[in-house]
Length: 262
Image 1 (tube, rainbow, N blue to C red):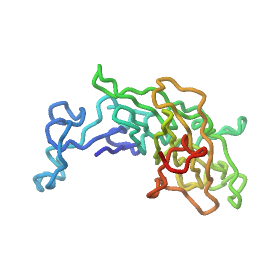
Image 2 (image 1 turned 135 degrees about the vertical axis):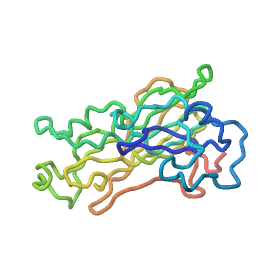
Image 3 (image 1 turned 120 degrees about the vertical axis):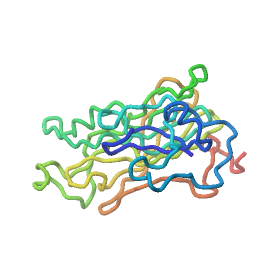
Image 4 (image 1 turned 90 degrees about the horizontal axis):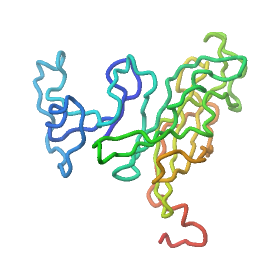
C-alpha cells in the first residue's frame, strides 16, 4: 500500500508505503523499499494503548519510499505530493498540488508564487535499479498555466475586499488526484484534477479543472507535451477525483478503425 502526505506543517511531505513485515522501517530508520512477495497483513498492528499518546503506534510500519524527500514539512517549500499512479513497476507519476500561496502581482496579472513554481504539476519518478532508489526524471506542467486567473461563468468578479483585496478569479496551482492508462504505442495518457489559488478565502474550494497530458513511458527528459483541459467545473462545483468506470479503460492509440480492443 502506497500513500502520500503533502500538506500541513508537521511530519514529512513525501511518498510512503506500509511495511507489512514490520522490519524495513526500523532497520533503515523509516526509509526503504517494499519487500517483494510479502503477503497482506491478516491482523491489525499490535500496540500498547497506554503509549499511544506519547509514542503513537509502535512499531512504526509506515516508511518513506527510498529516493523521495525526507525533509520536514516545516522547512520543505517545494514538495507537496497528492495522488500517485504507477505506470509500471519502475515508473511512478506523482501529482504535485503546489504550495497554496495566493500572492498576486497586479502588474503581471498573475498569482506570482504559483506562476513561478517549477515542481507543481505531475512529476515522473523512475526507479534506478543500480542505486536501489527512486529518482525524479522531470515535471510535467506545460499548458497548466500555473498562476494565470481564468474566468468561471457566474463566479464573482473583481477583487475580494474581505481577503486582502485579492482577485476572486481562481488560477491553477498544481495537480491533485490523478489516474492514467498505457497505450500500445509506448505512451501514457495521464488525467488529473487541478488545485487552485484565489482570493475567495477558502483555498481549494474554487471551481477547478480536469486536465490530461500524454507522456512517453520510456522518456527520461521532458518532450513537447502540454496539458489540455477536458472540463472546467462551473459555479458552485468542485472536481475532487478522477477514475475509470468498468469497461472504459481502453487504448486510445488503437481507436482508429478498430473496435475489437485487440
